[in-house]
Amino acid sequence: MAARGFAMTLLFVHALTWAEEPVTQPKWTLAKSEDGIRIHTREHQGGLVEIRAQMFLTTSYQAFLVLLEDSSNIPNWVDNVSESLVLKQISPTENIVYTTFAAPWPAKNRDMVTYSKYQLADNAFRLDIADASQHYPQQPGYVRIKDVKARWTLEKLTNGLTHIDYTAYADPGGLLPDWLTNTLSVSAAFNTFSALKKQLPDYQQYQHSSLNE
Image 1 (cartoon, rainbow, N blue to C red):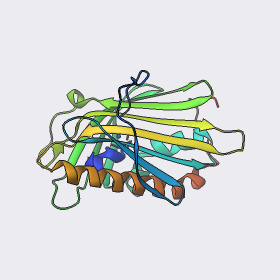
Image 2: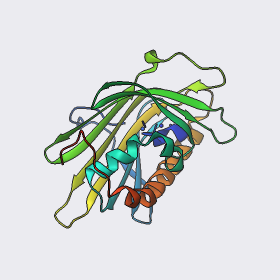
Image 3: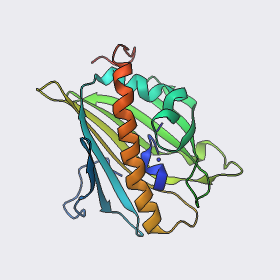
Image 4: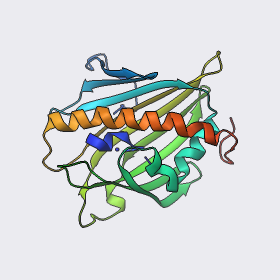
């Protein structure tokens, strides 16, 4: 599940290194703050940026996971997603997912294949996403998004709210200029979080059989 340019949304699409960040990493810069949603960027490589989106909501981890795994609903909240399909369930916590994106003009439509795994650690929920292009062949009519690395982290606070933190990087491929890709990344991340904010309340009554919260 879940995106670079517009692909920065995913699971969107969407990065964070999986170990502690080295002190030499560039600093995050605030790109947009509106309606309780904060979007930061920082330089990555080759002119592209990493995206970080954050907000505070009242939600359970189980409700969030059920929303993420509701593939038919993904296009209703992940920006520019046309379709999201689970190609293979490796284990109850691991999936291979294929996602297609309807790219805004002048870009061509994109697709990506990702490996995802979630866990509970230190009372926080974490979902890591990585490129898995080798698991599904290139499809006609799509430019393949590659080098995907992303992480969702949810942490409950003592005031009853949950901090939702999403970091992501990916190479959207094709010939889009970096400045346009980076601009689309900020917009896509904000639109995704804005839609997520509206969708999550409808999932609070659901529980997930593989997640003991």
